[in-house]
Length: 88
Image 1 (tube, rainbow, N blue to C red):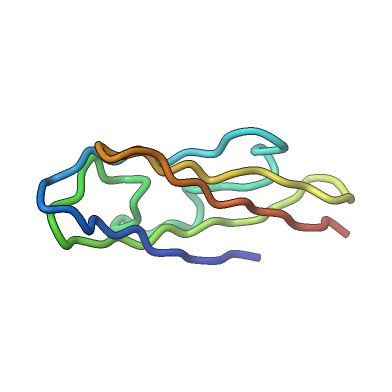
Image 2 (cartoon, rainbow, N blue to C red; image 1 turned 60 degrees about the horizontal axis):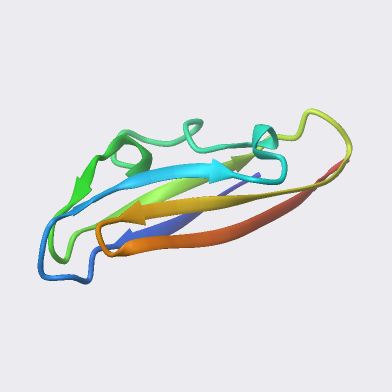
């Protein structure tokens, strides 16, 4: 299963952009497949008012309940998004 969220730079300046997975079970989630080339994970910055989508794939290798956190870091700070899924 996959989902998409949008990251937007609401500030007046260009911001650095780093997207990653942290904590829990990040090996059960993937930011790169099936992410198209425009996804945030392939960008290093966002200009004022710019947005980018980020695809997250839940691809469990085992059964059970899995969690991780998507971490988006820019000049203004860090935003996190909690993820979870159940492998069957």
